[in-house]
Length: 209
Image 1 (cartoon, rainbow, N blue to C red):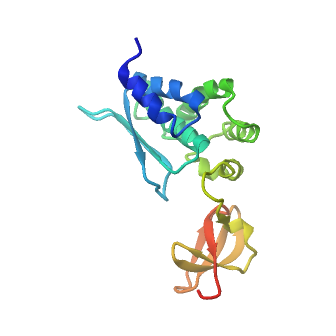
Image 2: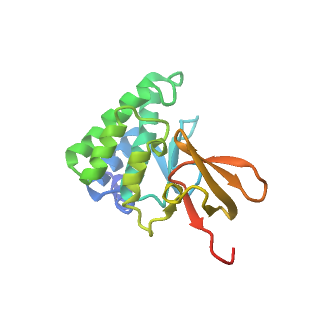
Image 3: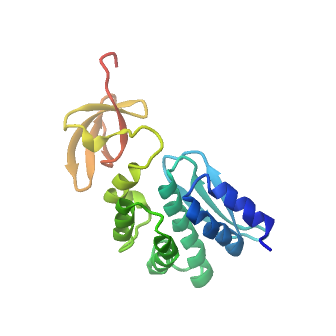
């Protein structure tokens, strides 16, 4: 008999990830005994993992505004932290060799299911060659994943010409040159320079701003 909690988890998961993946993730929640929290959007992270404490379960959180593929990738990323901790202990590096190994293994069933569109499939495979602390660091993967966002695609900083002015979090900036993988942008009010990812969502400056 399938536990009632597993069925409830699957029903909830189907709202956030591809339906074909919901059954396996629901079983992992039951098997690894972790609490999944679905959070409001956080600008500093997509998800996180907190290890088990006395009297408490492992805890994983994921932002609720991610598209289905981003949500699944983030969730599996965090589950890999859990399995790496269980297998190798707390001394293993957070995004070191053990975690990379676990992440790659956990992702394999989803490739076998064929749930990813071709462009996402290729981008994730390339990312898994050397997965980083966050998928945000892989710009090509993020460009592909952004195509499947629910809302109207935002204007990204890389789409604006150098010298253009833009609004970010109600602050006005001027776009500067690209240094390695980030743009140097000067805040109009303070004159300070900040580094921005090319995929930072920004607003164009209107005539009355």
